[in-house]
Image 1 (tube, rainbow, N blue to C red):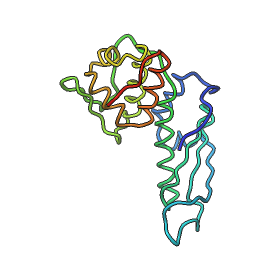
Image 2: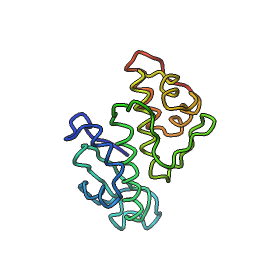
Image 3: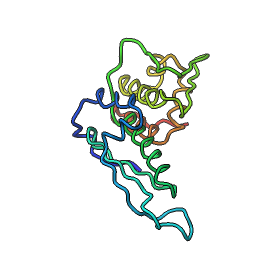
Image 4: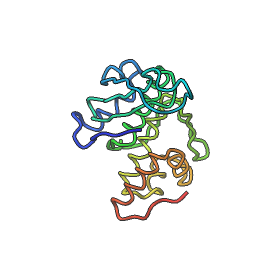
Length: 181
């Protein structure tokens, strides 16, 4: 779960996006961490401990939670992944003159390949949305700048529901109909 007020962050979107380079400990250090009890999985053992984790990222104003596991450690790790995703999806950065993909992103035959476990994954997600925003919601133009096919870009975004919603919000902002998979 993600919420927050990205309308009034204390830093520019480009500065916030650089947070994606931080290791987990440094990123967690920028957050107010709150643990609490919540309903969820666990059967008769649920709610016996405060295993849910809520992170408030001070610089961006984003709040994310992790509560699907009985382990507070796993929930904190999930919340950090959600924070990285939220930063990549919600904050746009201007495009460079040419596309430079993060390390570990593979483009072959104009097809985009990147694992979610790759450190550059959230950079790639943000870059794809940056291109779509810069090209006024037109996926063909964004894909051409990114060096991938339009269908590869669309599939990459569609595989991540929050990014897909943001892509369609960008298109709506420019008076275009929603993308379809």
